[in-house]
Amino acid sequence: MIDQLLVSDEQVSNWVRKSRTITSVTRIPGDASTRRYYRVQTEAHSYIAMIVEPFPDQEENYPFLAVQKHLSTSGIRVPTILDIDSEKGFILLEDLGDVTLLRKLQSVTSAQVERQLFEEAIDALVLFQVKASPENKGSQTKKKSLTAFKLKFDEEKLMWEVNFTIEHLYKEYLKRNLSDADEKIMTGQFTKICRFLAEQPAVLTHRDYHSRNIMVPPAQNEADEEMVMIDFQDARMGPPQYDLASLLKDSYYQLEESQISGLIQYYIKQYETLSGKSIDQAHFQKVFDLMSVQRNFKAIGSFASFLNKRGNASYLKYIGNTFENIRRQLLKYPEYSDLREVLFYYYYF
Image (cartoon, rainbow, N blue to C red):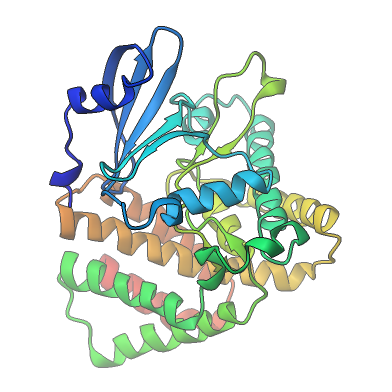
């Protein structure tokens, strides 16, 4: 799969050149996926060429294209698609620059500036959840065609992610021999958590909404800055807290608990205003906490699998922060003390 995506600068240039004069093509870093990205510079503009596996049998139903079209028509700011070659697996996108929310956060000068940036990201998320979810009147005509609406974070999917982490982190990467009793505690307690989460009302979720998947394109001034979502192709239905937990309990950026509490309150206010629905704050907080546990545990499994499957160890450094997110959340719930003890026993010993 990866070899298919290792195209040359000349191949990218030849494809884009059919309607544009190219001055340079530069390979740029991507995310944890196998996709490849190139910055294509012309005399007047800059573009991003995304290289994926060829998808001639899918065309507009290719997940990235289908979700991008739905989000764009729902009023969500996502990268504009300029050209497509499904036979080659080439997709030409607008160039949003190199500044992610994570990079923007590196230059914050105060907790207030930090909060403002996260509030902007929450504004974009609330708009996404309200306007792009199937219950929104504007989305009714798309219900039957968008695959993301038919997929859900049900108990089976959430537990699949849990078991994925047990396999890739504890058994394959750490080489731990879990006792039958301890593995039963892990799966039993997580089943209880996942069942609870699967019972919650669902909205469309981005599924990977964190500081590295939010772009902040160049703007004339700060007032014109906008948050643009990327990497949304795996969208599916799930609790509203799923994406909020991804954002506020980020593996790549640690927020103070007091800041998180204030931002949750901000989210609730914005969601109630835009959706017209009332939120039970105590229940919302519990779902957020337990969703954070599951979501962070899943992320740890992904980090370990990048090493196990691809030999990429660069994400292992985030496991410690992510486990700390889990520890903090589980401390709030004595009924899950056995789970906390087992998780950390096999991680630290």
